[in-house]
Amino acid sequence: MLMLQGVVGSFALSTWLIFIAYFAWFFTSGKDYAPMARRDAEILWRIHKQDAECKSNKWQEIRHKENIVGFECECGYRHLQKRPITTKTHP
Ligand SMILES: [Zn+2]
Image 1 (cartoon, rainbow, N blue to C red):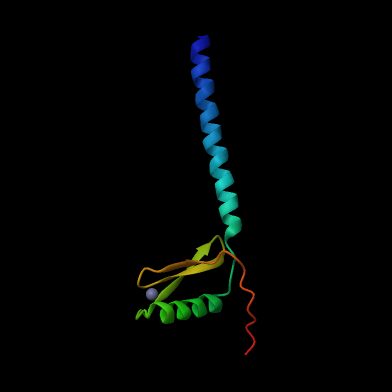
Image 2 (cartoon, rainbow, N blue to C red; image 1 turned 90 degrees about the vertical axis):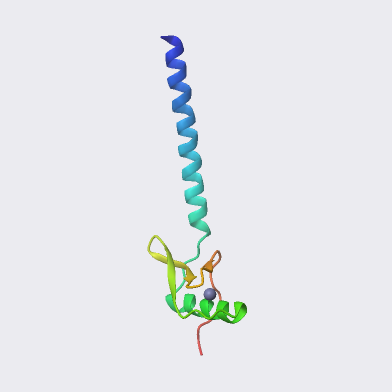
């Protein structure tokens, strides 16, 4: 009986460790993403098209929770914004 408790205890402990590791990863990786406006994502997509000489005409935003954090090009290229965009959008 004591041995069974030990097995259950170690199982619970490892489950907890996985749980904590997962949440630590979830929160730290979530913080890395920087939200951007849809327009900014489109500008970055156009830069990608020039850089990669990409001929695609479609892209879609990648969302993290409610925020746009990057884009995915039709060619399969994905960009995730890790830091806030500091460029001014005034003409
Ligand atoms: Zn592309």
